[in-house]
Amino acid sequence: MLRGLINDAKSAVGNLVLKYVARASVAVPFVVAVGFAIAAIASMLVERFGAVTGYWIVAGGMTAVGIITAIAVSVREHRKDVAEDLKEKADTQGVVSDATAPALIQTPVALLGALFATPGGAATGLSVSRALGRNWPLVLLLVLGGALFWPAQTAEEEFAAEELDVPRKPNGADAYMPSEMRH
Picture 1 (cartoon, one colour):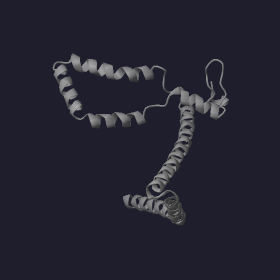
Picture 2: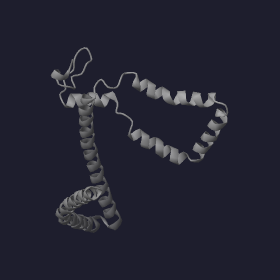
Picture 3: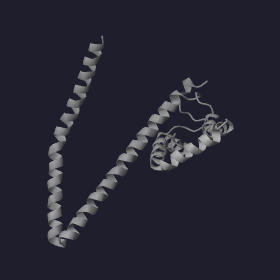
Picture 4: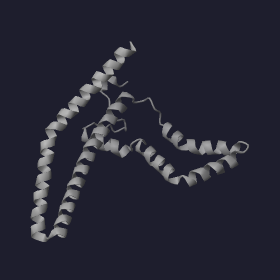
């Protein structure tokens, strides 16, 4: 039984790798062509403006292309993520109460209060804060990583609702789910 599961996993991974190798093999000639085009542009700029200025122009142009591409990709991914979030919220609407957000905000304060209320809690808190102070880059990295998973703001939801033409009700109830599912 386990052997069959392993073989299925191997074949799935093999098919996925072959699919991406096929896609990459199609893209390779275009990447090489773009490389030669950039080299030709760099050569023309060096002849016209000199070596240092020509290469700075090429670097600036490539940076501009990269920034524009990054903005386009991030906007596309953001819209896709917001649409997926709206679909997920439509599936789980009413599951999480309005008291959840304040409870999540008050939890760290309550934990600190409990820590300092226990015998030896102040000493433990002080030693933990010293350890966090010594390792502040790691703490900062963990905080930034946690911020990536923090829930989106309601302004994004409103933006997505407007983009997807989700009708708004005057009483504040949004029509994220079909009318036949509402009670």
